[in-house]
Length: 281
Image 1: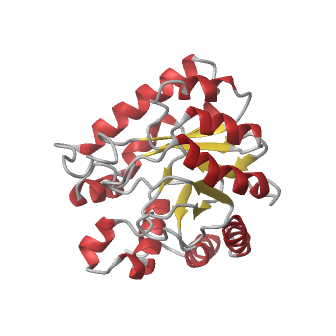
Image 2: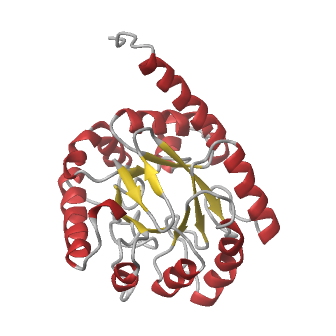
C-alpha cells in the first residue's frame, strides 16, 4: 500500500510516524512552544532527526472548546513555516479545514491536506479535487470543536464512523480524486467518550475493509489521561503505547508529539516480526 501526495509516493509497507508541529498559542499540549518561524523550523528539523517520516503543521487549535481562528491569523502562522518546511525533504501535511489555507499551502508545495472536517467546509472539496495529486486525510468529527465534547456521540461508535468516512470518500472519488491519494482518520477524541475512543482502538481492524490507509492520533489525548490519571505533559508513555496498539491493529500512520520514543517502540516491534518469533499468548 502507498499514499500518493503532491511530491511523494509514501510507502506504507512499514508504519509511518507523522510528527506534530503546532504553530498555535493555545494547543492543548504544546501551545506557544514554537511561536516564531525559526523556532518552528528548528522543531521540524529536530523531529526529522528523531525519525519522523511526515510533518503535520497546524495553525489552529482544535482541542475541545477551542475558539475558531481567523483566516488572516491562520495564514500568518502557517505560510512562513510551510514555505521553509517544504525544503526539508519529507512530506509536509497541513492541518486545516479552510479552503483558502489549503490552496495557499498547496501552491507552496505542501503534500497533504489533513482536514478534521473531512472537506465539509464550502469550497474545500473543490480545492483538493482540483489539485492533480495532493494527498488528503479525511477525519471523522462529531459536531464541531466548540461543542463536540459537550454533547458526544451516542451508541455504537464504529458503524457511525465507518458510514461517515465511506460517504466522504465516495463523494471525493466521484469528483475524480484517485483512491491512493486518500487516507482516513477515525477522529480519536473528536466528539467521542473515553469508552468510545477505546472501542475504536479495540475494534480498529473492523474499519480496514475499504483498502484505505488509516492515520490515527492518540498522542497525549484526554482519554489517556482519564485511564492513567496523568496530566497532559506526562502522557508520553501511554501515548507511545496507544500508537503501538493502533499499529498492531492496522494503522499505517500514527500522528504523534513524541517522535523519538514512538520510532523506538516501532523498531522493537519490527525486530520482533523480523525474528519470526512466536506470538506471545
